Image 1 (cartoon, helix red, strand yellow):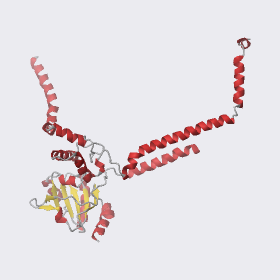
Image 2 (cartoon, rainbow over the protein chains, first blue to last red):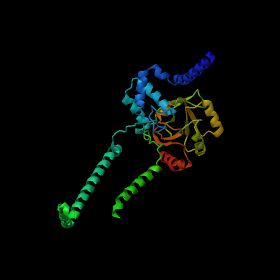
Image 3 (cartoon, rainbow over the protein chains, first blue to last red):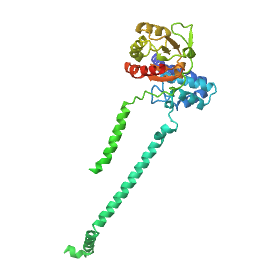
Image 4 (cartoon, helix red, strand yellow):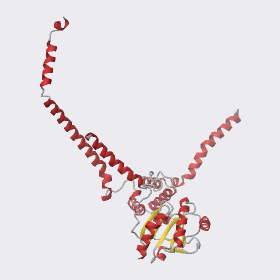
Length: 168
Length: 174
């Protein structure tokens, strides 16, 4: 009984310890200096990994991303500012590394495009609504109100009839 | 009939853009290095590790830098093209052996042929970062003044050689 319990405990301990051990091997830089590591990850979060293009440098485990994170770490350690480091990467990989592309002549469409589309849509909606309202008014005018008015008087006459009349 | 015209026009334009987008390769990141001076380096030579070569040693000639590694699968596809180009003796091709084991790299060259005048060893990939390398193989054409004039990401094909590299070399040497 006791030995079975001990075996189960050992199995659980192994299960828990195995991933822990793997993590420990992967994370030494974090343990070294958590503040620096947080800084590296914050900076890497706004930079795009060039290999797996829809991941940030912080998310990616591609070898190049690891190398570039090491570059970030070294440069932060060397006391360079975030702006300087980003400039360093842009000089090598272009604006493509930035998740937030800078506003300049070639990116105006990118930044202003959605708003221009929204405005165009709103303008189109306004024009359509106004056109429809005008068409309805014109329709009513074309009917001359004549048929409408006659129908209304007939309805009124029917409603005004005393109940006894219909009942009889 | 007229009611369908506008949506149809919008559809045609959108399909046009999407069709154009299909032909673009999202992996081709335009390099900001074109027209700029090739980043400096000073690296050991693969075949003679005691010797180092720097970018200033290569000035005064038009040369090609080809980033390769023995672990790189598409380098194998590209390799015969480079071997063929090197036989024409139009341009010296310098290899940049990127994040590789030198023994593997030498064995690889022995097996597949060596189109390089020399290969430089970038064991930790630092020079690769300076050159904006993110997918091996990559190829650069560098002019007499040490300015990068062309960059190809991914394997060089016979078409690339014929349509891009050879005309550019002719222009740079002429």
